[in-house]
Image (cartoon, rainbow, N blue to C red):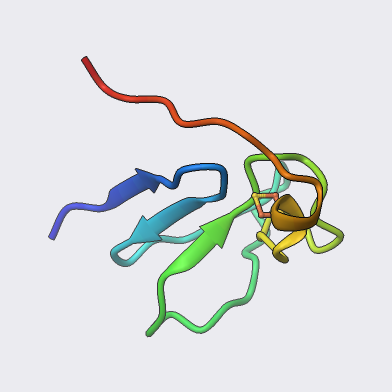
Length: 67
Ligand code: FES
């Protein structure tokens, strides 16, 4: 199965599918692999690289569309 990365309006990247998420040292981030993961796009999450909902309080606005 391919992985889908969905750009959410005013929010995170949702990663749909089985992936390994690693840091610059190739160490894996731990997360529940049975669930989708949300990666912060706004830069304000206190639990990087994951979204913690901070984009809502900062009223992050970004709604890119593919052509
Ligand atoms: S996108 Fe949700 S906290 Fe940054």
